[in-house]
Image (cartoon, rainbow over all chains, first blue to last red; front, side, top):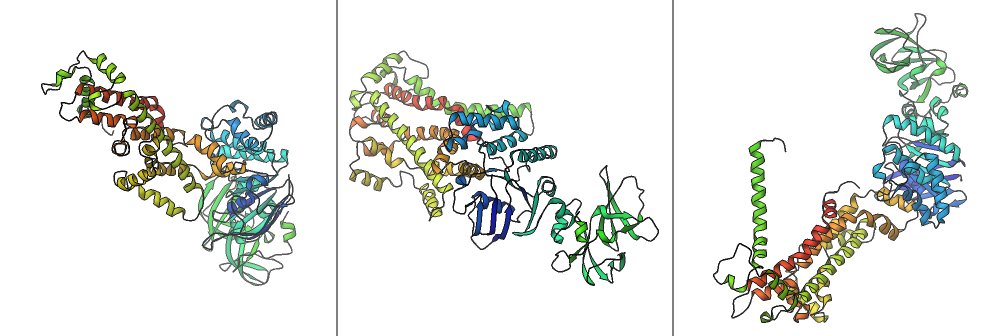
Length: 358
Length: 282
C-alpha cells in the first residue's frame, strides 16, 4: 500500500500525437481514484504509464517513495485487471492466480495459502481446477481480480474491468469491487468511460478530456459544481442542460425569455448557463417559463421530460405523480443555476458556490 | 447448405465417392501389386486382385533388399528417411517459431525488412536454388551426411508466416499481464506462447514431416553412398533398372512400406492436427 504521485506526466507518441499532456495528480494511500472521460481522452494511456506498459515521455510517476519511470512493470509491485481479463487460457484458475507468485519465487506453501485466501474472498473456490474457458464472464472477472489480490500489491490498476459484462452483473461487480477495495485498503486507480461507475466507485473522480485533467474532486462535488461545460455534460445522467444565455442586472435570459432573477455575483454579459434536470420544477404560480414538451421517457421512479424553452432543448426530471400537458410552465431557482464562460466553458465562481457544493 | 434436396444430396455423395475412388485407386493398386510374385507382371497387365506372395515379398525387402538394383535393405533407408523427416520437421518448427516470436514481439531495427526477406524466400523453393545450395553444401563437406540432407531444407518461410499469424491473434493484454506477473520474454514464450501454440505445432509437424519424408531431388543430389539413401530414392533406383524389367512386386512392396510412417503420423496426430487448423478460440 502506497501513495502514488503523478507529476507533470505527458505521453507523446511517435508522430507527435499528444495522448496525455502535463497531468499532475496526488493519490493518497488507500484512495480509490477513478479516471473517467470519453474514448481517446488519454485515461488508459495514463493508467498504462503508471503500470509501466507505456513509457513516460516526460514527468515522473512515484509509487510509495520510488520514482518508477525506469522500473519494469513487474518490479513496480502493482497489479492490473484488464478489460478482457487476460487470463492465461491454458492454465487452470489456480495456476492463473499462482503464476505471478511462482515467478517471484514465493514458497509453495505461501502460494497455496494466498490463493486459498483470495479464492475464498472472491467465492471462486469451486472453480480452482477449471480452465478460464469453462467459466462465465463474471467468474472470469473474479479470477482476474484474484490474480491481482494474491500479489498483495502496492496498487490496483483497473482498465475498464466491467465493460465486457452485462448490465446487471456490472452493477453487482461494481459493488463487490468497492467493498473489496475498502476491505483491503489498497490504493486503486480505475479507468472507465461510464460516469455512473465513476460516481459510485470513486473516492475522487478525475475527469479527463483531450489528455488534460478537467476536474478532480469527490463525486458529489464534481456533480454539483462541475468545473467546465465538458464536465457538466459528461457527469450525471441525464446530462446537465446547457444553453447560451445573457445576464443583465441579475436576471438570466435564454433567447430573450427571462428564466431566473436575483442572481448575484455574475458580471453582465453573454455566457453559458447550466441546469440539472432535477433542478427544474413545475411553476406553482402562473408566472413560470413556458416549456414545450417534445417527448417523455418513463423511468418508473421518475419521468424525464424532454422539451424546449425558446427553442433551446431542455430535459427535466419530474415525479411521475405530476400531471403532464403539452405546454407547461416551469420555474428555476436562481441558486441552482451554473454559469460557464461562453468561450472557454470554464465555470464562473459565485459566492453561492460554497453552499451549492453541499 | 441452404437447400436440402434428395437428388442434390445424391449428387454431392456421387462427387465425393468419385473423388475418394480417384485418390484411393493407385494406393489399392500398389497394395495389390505388393502381394504378387515377380512373374505376374510379365503380361503387361496390372493385377487387380490379391496374389499369394505378400509375406515373401515383405520379408525379403525388409531383410535383404534388392541386390540387383544396388539398394541396401529397406531398414536402413527407412531409418534415413525417418531421421531426415524428423530433423526437418523439428528444425523447421524450432527455427520458425523463434523467428516469428522475434518478428511479432520485439521492436528491433529493420524488423519489417527481416519479415519481408523471410516472406520473399517463400517464392524460392529448393528446386530453384538447388545449384548454389549444392555448391555451398559440397564446399562445407556436408555431402553424404545427415546434416547435408537436412540443414539446407530447415528454414521455413511458410511456418514462420503461420506462427506469425497465430501470434498476432494472441491478445496483447496476455503479454502485458505476463509482464506484470514478472515473466520476462523467454518465460512468456515458454509458459504462455508455447502451450498456446500446441495445436499449431502439431498441425505443422504433420505437414512438415510428410514434406521431409517425400523429399526426392535434394537427397538424390547430396547422397552418393548407399548408407545415406532415403526410401524415396530407393524406390526410384529399384524402378529405374538398366537392361532388365523392374520388379514391380518389390517396388510396390517398398512403396507400401514407405507410405506407412506418414500414415502413422497423420492417424496418430489427427485430432490435434484438425484442431490446429480449425481452432479459432484463443
